[in-house]
Length: 321
Image 1 (cartoon, rainbow, N blue to C red):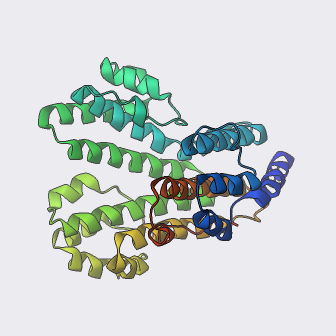
Image 2 (cartoon, rainbow, N blue to C red):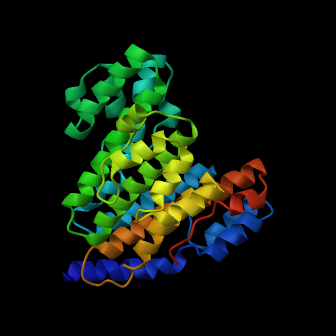
């Protein structure tokens, strides 16, 4: 492993001493109010003094994360796989904003590979050539579909599928095993979510043909066929795949399934913690921090809205440390 990666991994391992554990999440959840929750986060190295809101705290921490990665790795584009989801989210917002004439500024998210404002301007002006190739065609297709049909669900399907295809392509091009596995697993689990929900709603084969993204560990033609026959048929199909555990979890609830999906990916990331020969530990660290941010946001939102702790607890994911 090059010396620069050895140093990078060592720096990240040192910073992991301040990462939140599941015990820390329980402490956050048990906090009496936002002030006490912020104090707990401050103990773990979060900058809570200069932030005006929970969102601002998390945005600042995400900025610090990517600044650190930029210090440690010369070319951080290898980690763009984490950012493409934000690009496609912003594309959805831009397309719907153009059609509905509503301002989308409050739902745009930072940290994509393309500035959100660039995406919005390109869609507003129909200047799709201003977008990178991976957004260009899907932007035009989604906008035309929404203008012609008024179907926001169809718009979402077009963009979501393009994102999954992009994700899988990035994984296939990578020479890092964890990135390959992350992309493949993420796409397959998203296909399972789509099929499970669609089968419950009685969606037909055409819906699944439009919605499901190709991947190696599932035959999406068979997934769509089983799902179009109903939820029970889909569960039977799933039991014969590498994702047979998902059938038992889905039988409990979608909330349990989504937690199972995230925990499965985190378990794979943990295996790379002490891998000293690739960039995988850095990828795993980013994945771990993003999961941590998601859980902190969930708990802080619960505190702000005085939600029942037990409801939130069942949504908490397995963390990295």
